[in-house]
Image (tube, rainbow, N blue to C red):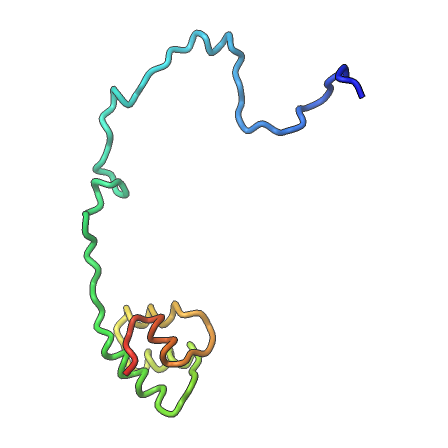
Length: 122
């Protein structure tokens, strides 16, 4: 093999950036806009717009604990669907129903479901 192989066609590795000829770039002034524009920190999602401590509403899990005590009386494992169905019938708060609905499908022992939901084993 020799190093004198003519290059034809496209480059072997695709490039992700377009490059301008050096002659074009030589006349373009570089401006540091960070020195001109003050940083915007009052937009949603910026650090200054988010309070240091986010208030998380504590949910009373006692109704969930009572429901699980009743459900698991004499049962070893119960499906997520059955737990959710009974929770809706018991008119549990929306926050607790959302937690139950977020559980993956399957069967759970009482200690598994309470660990996942943040309740306590009664």
